[in-house]
Structure formats: structure tokens, C-alpha cells
Length: 444
Image 1: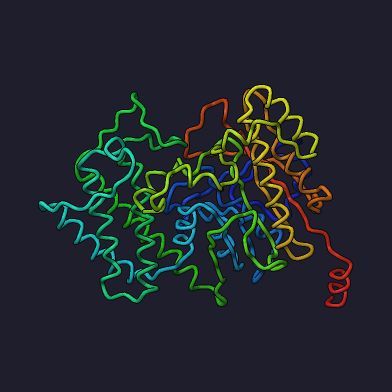
Image 2 (image 1 turned 120 degrees about the vertical axis):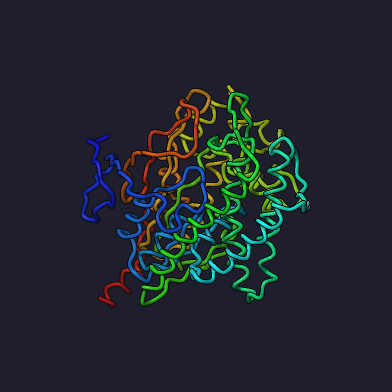
């Protein structure tokens, strides 16, 4: 790699980032406006997508994140005056992204907050016994008094719909307060709040007391209402309001109209690194997002899933991509299951690359941000494999640039050997066709 460039805050658009160069962005505020409404693993810090959006799109154009997670790209696109489309298969990601990017008036939020707070305080301080949701091992994950308090909070939020709001108002308010509620669930559980997987650690002594769940919810609701007001004011300062859509769909087959996107920016899940459904399993139980199924059922359709059937990995997978097949072959000798998981991840990523290629307008860019990780003692160079797949004849992108961005903060604790020192930013361009080049000449 070339010498590292340290950037304090926003990345200048005129900065010359050489191919295979390295930058380190010192993030100023990763939770401003509604960015901090809910924790999310492997989360973008805003400066990087902001730079990519500014550099590779124009005001009024449409930006897509096909694996939008908690919606960082979508919010940054809105703030830069772009229309935005977010896609994610994960139900809690869809919910967080929608809440984060839906402006709500402060007075409406304050009025609703007062109703919810009064209801919570009245019930918690009485002998009221709420109906506690039924889910696997709930008494293992939560103390009895926490189960009661969380159930009362959830009931009080659900009562929004009966308080004289229009249907659309009730939906926005219910979603906002539900996401705030979800944000405190892990903290008041018996699980380690910093681990990528939902686990209880014997050495971790969590001294959760009665009223802790209520007080955490009240405090975080106040904080996020203030942040929402800042976002609402910012949004309403725009002359032309950006249009935003969050779609619960598959990044391999989004259902979006072809050639309708000007720029795509995403950070895919890391292969064999973060189990998103398991990270948020407690939150999804409380929000009713698993719908009576099992966690394995939810996980099976994710890109990068570790939930696979034994008959799927009896034989080694092959793709025709030399570096990937060599890695999978070596891994197959050590662990057939993990070998298949890696193989499937890149097969799915190829489907995503083809899908985004079809959605982009000619000349549009797809910026993929991904880190390398260690699997069974070997370094998986994901950025090189994705670059090679994307620029193959089977997909059709051209490589515009590729550089390394240092990671400076994580909210999640990852074992040292599995930590990623940073992420590669792969800038792919959909070539102009002869017809589009003629059109550009005529318009100029």
C-alpha cells in the first residue's frame, strides 16, 4: 500500500486517492442527527459514504444501498439532496432505516412521548401485570422485573394507534418509539451488550435493577426526540425534498426498475464474521419480527449466512474464479461446511453485482466497501475476489479505483484474530454504451 493519508472529518472531493492507496478518516460525530438511534454491527461511519455520494452523484439523482443495514447511506444521501432507495432482507434493518430517515415534527413527538410516559409510569408503579411475549429462553435472557417493565413499555407504545392519530401518523410514531425501545433491550438483558452474538458471559456481572429498563427508555426517548428535531429542521430546510424508499427485499433480486439508479453504495455483510440475526435476536423477539418461526428460518436467506444444510457441502463448490476457487479448495480440506459458506457468499455477491449492474444507468458507479477477514487461519482477500468477479465478462463492471480506509471505531467486540484493521473501497463503473455516449454528446 502507498503512504497513509490522515483526514480530519470530511474527505475533500479533490483529494487524489491513488489506486491501492490508504486513507484514515478521523470521524467527527458518528451519532449526529438520527445516525445514533440504534446500534448496529459493522456500521458505516458517515464520512465515507458522504464522500462517495458527493463524488459520484449529483443533487437530485438517486442513490441505492442494496444492503442498507441501519440506513447510514440513505440518511447521508438525503442530507446531500439525493433521492435514496434502501434495500435489506433483515426486518430490524428495514425498521431502523425507515425510522432514521422519516422526519417527524417535534410537537407531535413530544405529545406522543407524554402519553406513553404517563402510561408506563402508571402501570409500573402499580400492581399491573402485563402480558409478557413468549419466546425461547426468555427467563434466561431477562430478570423477571425486566420482563415486566419491557412488556409495559411495549404495551404503552402499541397503544399509540388508539390515541386519535391518523393511520400514517400512528405508523411513524409507533415505528420511532419501537426503535428507541429496541435500542435498550440488549442493555437491560443478561447478555453481553458489546458482543456480536447474543451470549451470556459468566464473568460479566450486570447489575440491572428495578426501574432500569424504564429509566433507560425514558432517557433515550428524550435524546432521540432531540436528534429527530434536528433532522426534521434540516430536512425542511431543503427547497426540494428528497424522495426516500426503504424496501424489505433481497439484494440479489430487488424488484427495482432497471437503469433507474445513478449511484449505488454498500457495505456487504462480512463472510463468516457477523451473524446479524443472532446479534439482534432479543430485539426481534420483542418487536415481533420473527413471527413464530425460528431464528434459523430467518437467517437462511441472508447473504453470508452460516445456516446451511449438511447435504449442501458434501462436494466442493466451484465458480471458475481462480483465487476464490483456490481458497475454497484449501478450506475444503480443513472444514467442508465453512468452505461451502465462503463459496456461497461469493456466489450470492456475484448475483448482487449483476443485479446492481442492471439497476445502474450507463456510466453509474457501484461503491462496495468490504474488509478482509481470517478464516481457519487463512486471510480471505474479499476485496480482490469481488473486484475480479465484478470486472469479469459475466458481470461487466470496470474498475475505477480501489483504496483502503482505516477503521477507527467499533461498537462491537470482535476476537483479536478476527478483527479487521480496515476496509477496502472498491469503485466500480458501469461502462457507457455507444447509444448513451451519443446521447451525452447531444445533450452537451
